[in-house]
Image (cartoon, rainbow, N blue to C red):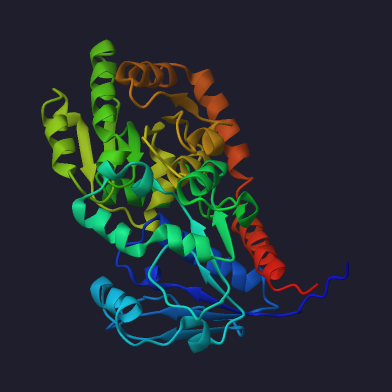
Length: 392
């Protein structure tokens, strides 16, 4: 058998998520991976696709590489985007961009020519596995996407963890040989910062952070199990009445965030629970570094960026023993049952009262985080493209 590889490809990439005003984990995955592909897959041409009625400041970001071009169809929102790709007369993206392979870093509406080769990254299938974690509107949106059909017709599927791969195979009936596990990376900006550094002092002042605190960072929504953090923190404080460790909950308010605030008000320690809104990417390194403990007892994650980011900043991590979290964070985090509030409280008590354990967790976290790089991710993604474009 003789393999002949085409030495360069025209690769289309959907970057519509980079038009969002606030970046989610999917947006950051798209940004980081596209930048890495441009750097480390420079023999290929990248044709980026986005659509927005008007440009935002810095959206989409500039990709100043000689092998990159951007096509913008200027359709403004999800509803019109849906109509453009599913109802109206529209050009096929592979023809519009003249691509050999089209890459979707996330699940979205798209129109291709019959037989077009495309690759999709699946971050998680929580909307299929646990639809009750989502609003009716979100569930209708996911149904309209017809995810199973999208993945079944894909030339290849990238799963961000072995757990997500199993979900893709089971829930969407995708052949195992078509699903490739490629771990996401984490940005090199995540590293330990001294509390005395100018950056740490700036962030502490900007967010009015307490001197000592444990941290949650992520969306405020049911799937993240934030009520259990508050209840576990309350138990910890009752067991340690002299403790001056506060609880900081940072992230955008999403569905049912009012329930979280109600639990906090009823906890008896509301004055010691600090709610922050969305935290800018530039501030997250200092926030993680200043925290004495990061707590992330999510019910379901397909990968889980925050525990890795916290570990890269030298912060001990407690997270769940379910879904992809043991796979991604099991090498450094203290794993707990997300349904067991008492167990979570005991874990918090154990870490905050044991300096040796903190140091051990810190060292293991720093070492483990080094295994996740965007360069490695990009090189493995390019291999998937090349294998599709090979002729034998």
